[in-house]
Amino acid sequence: MGAATLFKTPNGEEMIVLSREDYDALLKQAERAEDLEDVLAINEFETRLAAGEEELIPAEFVNRMIDGENPVRVWRDFRGVSGKDLAASAGISAAYLSEIETGKKEGSLSAFKAIAKALRLDLDDLVWDRDETPANDE
Image (cartoon, rainbow, N blue to C red; front, side, top):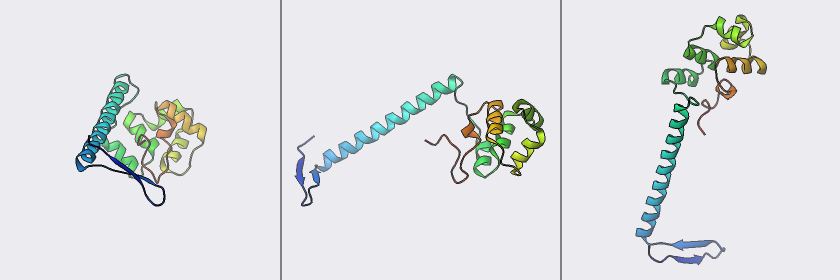
């Protein structure tokens, strides 16, 4: 890289002037760093997937949640569990589960915790702000 010129603006802000070649080289390095971060994130996900700590969910199910369908119902369908069996596993009545899934009742925190455990999920997978997409977008 060539020489950079450092100067201060009248309001005291430090500025650096680079050649176009040096500027382009810095941009390329930044792109490579971003690419490396992406590769590392993919590798970490694949390791967690292989260890059973992550799972792949078909777009059909994700789209249903994005479209506003109740996450409990979508996850129950994805897991292939009947409402009666999920309710029994969660220790709640089938009628209460149905009311949660249809939006007639919000459901208690303890009910959601039990449902999440029965579906092998984190609570965040069932409860998220409707103005946002489901979690895992960090």
